[in-house]
Image (cartoon, rainbow, N blue to C red; front, top):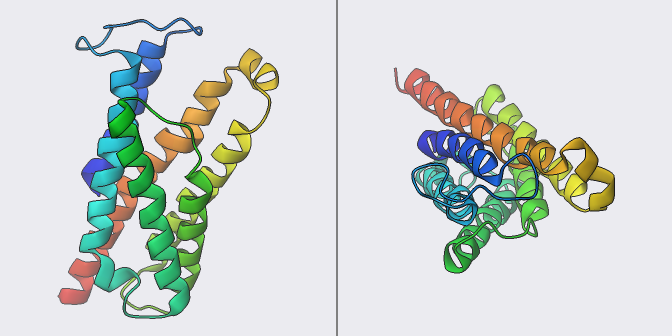
Length: 185
């Protein structure tokens, strides 16, 4: 999960670099990869790594306490895995249709795990923070592009949908590891 979060942030920086300062893509600008290639990695590989981390943590996160947490966990996995598979199959970064699913899943998981002693308060707040970022990113994405393009709308979207959540996932992974270490000692 930590690796997935860090790769999300790194891939977004590369994706934004090869996207170029305008709508004209700068093909093969970084390691010979196009914007489509880096977008595929951003939406595909990173999400699958984060989902794999969530599966490893499933017994601690959702499956031990409450229906709300379980529903959130399932929605979150759907919101990560389905778009990752789509991005890998189309070999590009697809549209943000599943952001509301992931955002809702994160919120439900955070609230549903509030009585779970296996999930620390910082971990729950990070889940909620990532969910809020994804919800705002989706709201931003549905605004008309003539409104957002003049202010670098795709970069703002990327910070909300990729860079911020990527850092959040890495911090969540660290928080979950630290909490597990405290509980075990």
